[in-house]
Image (tube, rainbow, N blue to C red; front, side, top):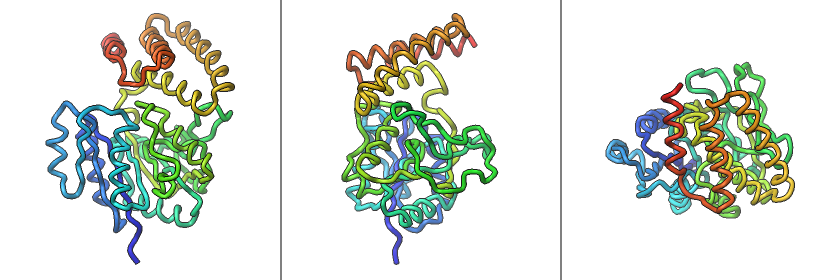
Length: 312
């Protein structure tokens, strides 16, 4: 009997070298019924030319502009739905995967028919036995899920399939039947928290969200945002506020502001002038949320990151 169709969606933005490395790992998959779609999110380098040679192994879709993570991935998800795929895997382009990744995901989904979305076991790319994500948990409902096992060496301590409160968008496997019910990624999130929002929407619709230890991925952490840069912090604050508005408008809002302002003060006390680029970026993210701005990061915040790197 033919295996169910899985469509793997990769989002590329000026990162063809990472995308090619990911595609090479996908070529080694042993699963017998999958397709790969690469969505180019308005790259300004020669990504489209570099990636076009990978056809027909991949379907290359050009967004024409930088739509952000959620809207860019939605281009690929819509294509997968049109092809009649039973499952979709959103995969960061700065990853490589185990050859049995899809087999592990599909087996888990078939074993647990109520599972709408499933998470991988994710390692650091440059420390291939060190865990980055082995599921997640939230201290309170309105706090973002925290990674389980992060920085631990994998010694088999997280080998049980388990429920999670948030599936990391680095490797997000979803049943298309469930996607049709809960909807696509929320495009109000340009970057960050779209995966946390989607996970919670699956749960609210009555689907299980599960961690699958046999599905393994290695991640070059924060390649797109340059690590914990001003850009990363800008989107973290802006998107977290939007997530709280959508799901926890009272408790989360009150808890956020007190914690955020205390965190900013501690950061400045500990780092002095070196902490100002990140502090300004965080405040900008909060201000842009309050004024309803949902587009790309302002260029002045990007420049803050460049200046802080030059001073380091």
